Image 1 (cartoon, rainbow, N blue to C red):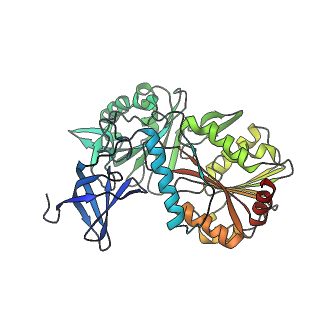
Image 2 (cartoon, rainbow, N blue to C red):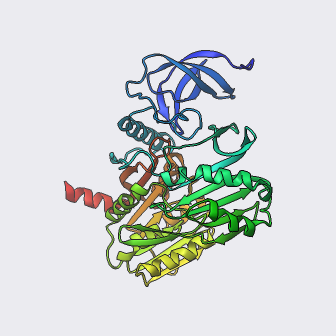
Length: 444
């Protein structure tokens, strides 16, 4: 143990975002993983900051959480992926709702909002069709694995209970292939997987430290013989990429078919695809003359699923391939009045071909820029829904929208897209304040 590390008794006051239990030492906050409210723990001081400490759990010595269970995965608490696997699922949902409430209050400064509705995941394991593995040498062989949370410590992984079995079954085959052809893959540092939900197709992304090697054709000629269902490999270098083979995967959600490209974003819980689309449709209450603006549209999950009921759909996204697929998915599913464009939304909204009446915002974890939120606030939409997996950025952005655009929060739904982890997928419906008060008076 390093000289700076001390063993300390800490009482956990509450759970906070990113999987931490919060306690105090010498009046400073201590953030410790796998520690839960009311527990008294022994923790090592792992990192000292000017305003806070980072603790490392040693053991619970008093008042263990009554909702603790034996985690089914042997890597739980080690690999850095699951932060709540040692908790019963019902309590995971309760903790996440409490964390979301506190984040809205203390980061967003949101003074009042409706009760948060919890939408549990139908399955709590084996739900992810996409993941990323680090590639490192372990006991003289290339292995796939994860890093410990907030570190570069490599943990080799033979199984991950969050992943679809069709990914897990292929891990030893891919490792065998890598070790047999290691000379063709210099500076390979990660592999991303995307498997079709029925397991019949696999697309891999090989990520390299510098540029990808010029051996891509040889690799792809050899790999499908070893890896069943492999249809394509995206070779990704520092600034360039090359797809060899078929990188598109086709999935069905409700009555719509979506083609998803290698590297394109798509929701990562196959059991929540239909429920979250149904929820968004219900919340927005689309009318035939509505015009939908879909920001960070990806391959068109919302544009198609919700937009089929609109008179016109506009979608914007900074990934060129995703925008191309969004248009193709619109055509594939019977949309005729649509407009998709590659646009850097961090720079604001720019001009629009039509005035939207309904807006869907589904940004990356970092949220929206101030420019974009200010531009959205100027639009006279009757409904805005903001979807995010990151409560701090969500709270910041919707607070700005309420403040700048005279919108109010009509509903908040927590959709558990990521059981066992700290991520909290949330859909917030915002409506004009006058509309909210009018409907509120009608209800009374």
